[in-house]
Length: 89
Image 1 (cartoon, rainbow, N blue to C red):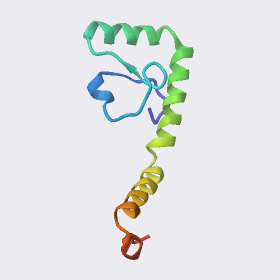
Image 2 (image 1 turned 90 degrees about the horizontal axis):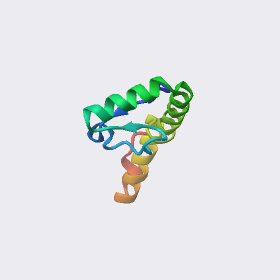
Image 3 (image 1 turned 90 degrees about the vertical axis):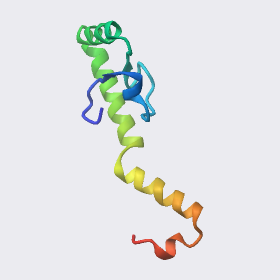
Image 4 (image 1 turned 180 degrees about the vertical axis):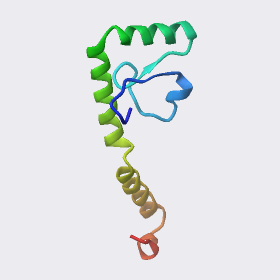
């Protein structure tokens, strides 16, 4: 996804990723469904391009290490009023 690739995965593989099915990721759990989705994407390069671009945007907006670091610092500040006193920033 970070490489702007369309990804076909299972529900388990998509756990923890805040992606919209059919928009940023393709989810298929049964083997035949997985194969069908893969073949469908191979036959629709424009859709592959669109899903890949949206996947990249999602990763940049939600899963970039700078974003994660910012969110962790915000959480620590909420949990501990003295956090900034001990933070190594």
